[in-house]
Structures are given as C-alpha cells and as structure tokens.
Image 1 (cartoon, rainbow, N blue to C red):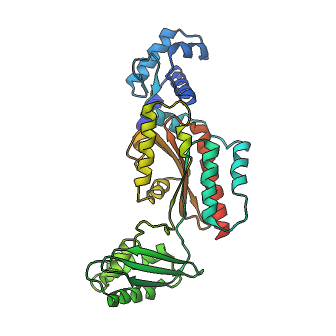
Image 2 (image 1 turned 135 degrees about the horizontal axis):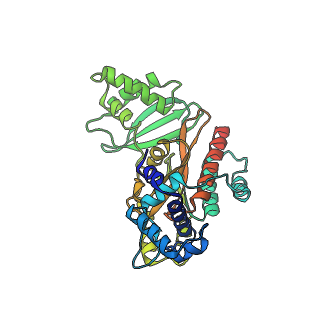
Image 3 (image 1 turned 180 degrees about the vertical axis):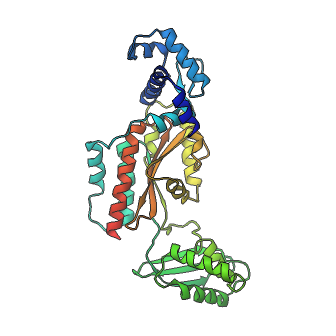
Amino acid sequence: MSETSDLLQEMNDRSREVFRRVVEGYLLNGDPVGSRTLTREFSEKVSAATIRNVMQDLECMGVLGSPHTSAGRIPTQMGLRMFVDGMIEVGDPSEQDREKIDATMGTNAADVSGLLDRVGSALSGVTQGASLVLTPKHEAPIKHIEFVSLSQERALVVLVFSDGHVENRLFTPPPGQTPSSMREAANFLNGLVEGKTISELQGSIAHEITQRRQEIDTLAQQMVESGLALWQGGEENAERLIVRGRSNLLKGEAEEEDLARIKNLFDDLERKRDIAEFLDLAEGGDGVRIFIGSENKLFSLSGSSLVVSPYMNADRKVIGAVGVIGPTRLNYGRIVPIVNYTAQLVGKLVSDRS
C-alpha cells in the first residue's frame, strides 16, 4: 500500500470530506479554499472553527498547504496524488467530447501521420490544454538493410520493408569503419533479417551478440545495441512528437510566475530528444497514467501534470502514446476518460490502416 493510501485510510469521514472539497474547489477555480466557504457547503452543520482545525490537521499530514498569507488551503503535490489515486471519480467521456474526437478521426484517408496530427489538434481543442502525440515507428518486417558511407563521421542505413516502405537513417559510425566493413555488417544483418520487424531483429541479434560477441563486426554490434542506428535531427524521423495547443496554456489572467512556468515547460519539450521516453512512461502500467509535478520525470520542472495513455496495434503491442499536459490544476475527472478514449480509438484506426 502506498503512503497516500495509508493517509487516506487514517482519515475519518469529516476529514475526507474537507479534503475532497478543498481539492475540488482548487481544481475548479485555482483559488485557496477557506473554512467559511466549506462551512456553507458542508453536508453537516459544523462551525468554521471545527473546519479550521480539520484543515490544520490535514496540513500537518502534508496533503494541504497554505499559499502565501492566505487563510485558505490548496492541495500539495502529495495531496493531489492521494486525490487522484483514491478519491477521483472517473466515468466515460461525455457524448459531446466523444463526438468531437470522432469527427476529427472519421476520415478514411490512409495517411496515419496526418491522422495523428489531427488527433493532437482535436485533443487540444476538447481539453483546452496542450496535447502530446507520439507517432509509431514503422514496424513492418524488414526485407533488406544497406549501409552507405557518407564521410568519416557520417553514414546512412537504408531500411527496406516488405511493404515497400523505405527509411533512411543517419548515424555516426565507430572510428575506422570502411565501406568494406559496412558491407560485411550489412551482409551479416541481412542473413538474419528476413521476415522480422526491427524490434524482432534486435532481439535475435542481441542473442547472437551474446553467443558470438568476438566474431561479430563492431559496426553490426553497434547498430543493434543502438537500435539499428539513431535518428539525428532532420525531418525524416518516423517516430516524432506532435504538440498542439500551446496557446491554450497561455489563456486567461495567468500570473507572471505561471507564464514563466509554461515557457519552461515548452522549452523542456523542445529540448527533449529522447521522445520515446513517453512510451517508457506509458508502458509502466495499463491504461491512463497521471504524473503530477515533480513525479513527471519527462520534465524538469514541477507544477505541471501529464495525463498519458499508450495506444496499441492489432497484436496488443504499444506503438505510441497520446496525452494532455498542463498545470497541476487539471480537471482530472474529465481529462482521464478523454485521453483513454482517444488512445483506444487511435489504436484501432492505426491497426485498421496497417
């Protein structure tokens, strides 16, 4: 049992209701919630002094905090985590939200990249937050691999897939490689590649490396251990991050501190090279995952939340992720089902078009 679950178990009914109303009030309008407000809304008749005592106890537990000199309270990061894990009520997306997502993805066009671009725009529009979409890698079986030397520091790996798709990936080869050694490495890989996807090929050759490490050419070994060459910038990346709705986070009467935080958030996003970390986050559990503040290892700053869900192909393999990012004051009860619904729909559409 987690620390937040233990704390929730320790609370009596009155403490839970006070805590829930503080969090819901904060998520609704962003303002600290005071004892007088709670006294008017409480389900039983209690005094403001009683409510203040309960709020002080909750503050000592670390789940509520007092911003500045305000008499009201707001949830701490731990408090938000406890609310999300144990008290949030998540249902299905509303019919209106579903219709907006469905309408965006209702086209029969075969362009998966265009589809996912529209998904990002739709998700941003529906949630009024910033949306994130990680597009899938091409996972058809490989037919042929070729290495092409461009210079001492640059080389190209050409991947020809069985469905006719071709990808060119730039990489930096190990020192001392020659066109001849690259041909030998390609011959070695082509001897194992038939009928395998990239991930399957990596598994097969990893086994070969273990068995025959001394015999395998250095280049072939490096290609496998680095994922058959690394993308280095450029616009040809078949695994890319789509970000939509940056302006949504700048709406309203945001304070200067909030604007600086949002700017840092997007600076982090634009600097992030290893966007596949989204999949690491998403694959860590089934369904939607919620990362609050500094729990979110993808970003360096706290004060932001990421609601992310993987989508899968017909073989139930995670191939991408969709999510919504914004301040910790998100309407989790509404955002979570929207992200979950979108991920399931994207997975079905991507599988159908493959």
